[in-house]
Image: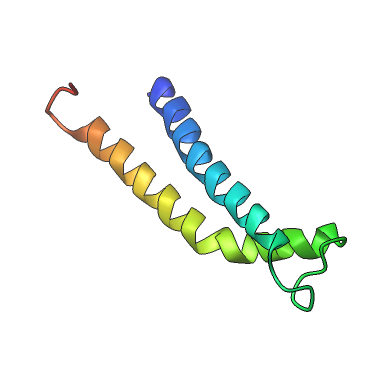
Length: 77
């Protein structure tokens, strides 16, 4: 069970890192009236707002897939 938790955390965090980095890069190209590029706090807030739903969705689907594999009587290939 401990090994499953490690894979679950790594799987979820890998998805979230890709989504968050992409949203951070997109925040550079947003209009200056929405996000000032020299204000790191504003960029971070925009990035969290932009990536929150996608990160929640990818985290939940990854968790469900891992738990379904754990409780499945079929052996993984």
